[in-house]
Image 1 (cartoon, helix red, strand yellow):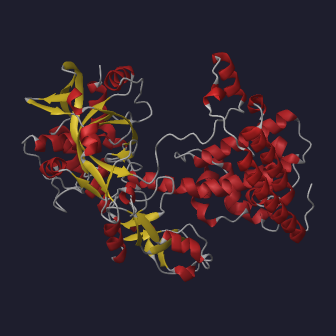
Image 2 (cartoon, helix red, strand yellow; image 1 turned 90 degrees about the horizontal axis):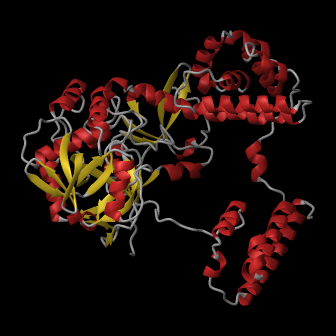
Length: 195
Length: 400
C-alpha cells in the first residue's frame, strides 16, 4: 500500500485543532532567549567550580547529567517543564528578557522570586549563581548535596578563551600539519595509515 | 555565467526591546548599534524573485530585519507592540523573529498569499527563507499555462502567490515507497530523508535567470519546497513517460514524487491545496478562498477532500496515491552536490572497514611527483613561521 488513506484523512481532519500559532511563536522566541543565559550559568560558573571541587566521579557525573538535562529543557520547543537555570540566570545575571519564564518556573517550583533576588543582591556574581542554584534545587537533595561542595569561582568565558589561542598552540598545530602534509604527499603508502 | 543568481535588497531594520512587561519593536538605524557592520549586513537582504516585493514592503514599514547586534542604548520609550508582527513566517526557522512582517493576523499576508491555508497550518511551517532564496525563473509555456489554469483564487489579493507548478504524487514513507523508488530509478533510495524525486522533463522546463538575464539550467541536486515547509533535496530523476497517474478519465505524466509529510501539521497546505489546484486544472469549479476566514478553511478540507489517483509505472498500475498540483519554491544558495573534502582514512573505523572489506583504497589515488609542491609549501611555511615568531614577540608569548 503506497498511502494509508484512513490515517491520512483522519490527520487532515483533525490537524487544525492542534494548531496554536501564537503560542508556537512565543515558545520559539523563548527557545532562543533561554539558550544563552542558561548555558552561561551552567558552563561558565558551575562547570568551572566543578573542576576544582573535591567531588567523586559519580557526583561529577550526576551534576553534568543534570546540567545537560537542564540545558536540554531550555532548548526544547515545549517550555512546560521548569528550567532551573532560567531562574538562576534571571536572578544572578539580571537577564530581564527572560523574566516571564523565571516567574512561571519559580511558581512551579514554589520559590519566592522577590525574596531570592533580595537575598542574593549584595553577593558577587559567582556567589549569586551558586546560591540561586542551591535555592532552586531545594526539592532535589541529590543535586543540592553536590552543589554544597562547590566553591564560587571567577566566571570563565568559555567561548572567548577558546577564540584567543596562544601562538605556541598555533605553532604546534602548524608543525603537525607539516608532518601530515609530508606523509600525505611524499611519504610511503604505508604512511597513510599512520596519519 | 557572468551574473549572479541573487541581488542585494536594502530593507529597514528594527530592534526588539523589553519595556517592563511589554516587548516593543523599535525601528533602528546604523547609529543605534555598537558595531555598525552588523547593522549593515542585516539591512541588506540577498534575494531573488521576491526581493523587490520585500524591499517595497519594507519601504511601507511592513517588513523589518532584526540585526543580531548589540544596541548602544536600550532606553527606548516608543515603538510598535510585538504582537503586531509575525516573527516566524519570513524569518529563518533557526532564528525566529529575525525578520518581522507587520500583521494583524497570526500569520502575515505574504505567508497567507503563498499558502492560503496558513491559518490552519503549524506555526513552524511557513515559506521562511525560501521567500528570499527563490531565484528568478523562466518557465516553459506548458508550466506557465499550468500555473495560470490551476492557481487558487483568493479574496484579497485575487490569486495566490506565484510558485513553480508540478503534477505531484504524494506517497507515504516506507518500504512500499522505497521499492517504487528502486524500480523507478534503479538505485536503492529511500524517502526517509525527505528527498524529492522529479521528472527530467519537468526539470528541463525550469530555467534560472541570472542578474544579467542569462538562462541557467537547474543543477543536478537542488533544494525545493512546497507550501508550508514541505522541503527536501532532489534525490533522483526519472523519464516522464515512465511514471503516469490516472485521475478519473485523465492520465497525466508525474512531475514530482514526494512523501505525504508524516505527522507534520501542514497537510491542508500541501495535499488539500494541491488537490484543489488539480480539480481546477481539470475543469472543476473551485471556491474562492478567504485566507483569514478560519471556518471556511476548515470547511474546504471536507468540501474538497484529497484527490486519489492510480499510479502507473511502465504501463502497470501499482497502487492508489494522493495527487495534486503542488506549487514549489527553489533554493539555490547552496551547492547540494555531495562533496568529499578529503578521505578521512585516519579514522579507526574507516581503517577497520577497509581492512575487513580488503578494499585497496590507496591504489585508487593517482601517484605523482609532489616534490615541487612540497618545496613551495615549505617555503610558505618558513614565511609563516617568521611571521608567527614576530607575532609571539609582539604578544610576549613564549614559543614551545
